[in-house]
Image (cartoon, rainbow, N blue to C red; front, side, top):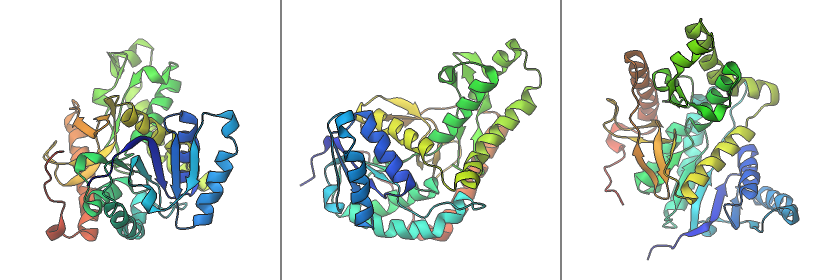
Length: 328
């Protein structure tokens, strides 16, 4: 018998910098009335739960506690932040083997609980680990998603807003592909309240657009490296990004977010998890949004997929790929 989902319950696996910041952000969101924290170090999870709980008189009622995998079965969303941290000078892909091994321990525990909620992977490298989660958890593809380039896209919009001196929420632009060094700024599809980014830049007197936009994209790509070099970890931005994804799921918003999901026969790519704008709702991924890409952007997207697939082949042999699954 399948477990019934409690739409007011969230589970967070991993209570490091990202997990604890995410727990704090979700507590403040008011989306949930119950939150269980799970960590290989139970005392760490209990300490975080106690620390956040002591501020509940200033927030909406919520039961926050440390627990075990038995507590995740009825969670509406299971957020996985567990894994080794990215060190200064280290790329996200450098984390692959050790974090895939950690997922080989976590995912069977999730599979054993017959969870019917959404599995949200936040650990890095998020695209590789989203694929690993689909493979190792046995959950339907649509219900396993990664945080993908939601944070990269927020960084892009923030920097564009400062550059153009407008509210970043009025800017519609995406980072697609890998959450990492091969990511692509999809400039061809970018607009400001319906006006193409190119036309808007011209109207504001920005003549050297190519150089300026290229610099912004480069800054976005290197943001994590800069922050890690300065404070050794990034966690507030990704915590807020995770909260945003949870909002779309719990409220069944059908919001369009560039989350990481398994791509099959799309843009000439297959059997890889990476980020494209997707409709996100109560069922997880409910469809991909086609972007009008330039020839160069499309080529770079396919190259991003190839880079990820090369890594996947090392961790998951071709004879052991994700099987086709019927949609729920």
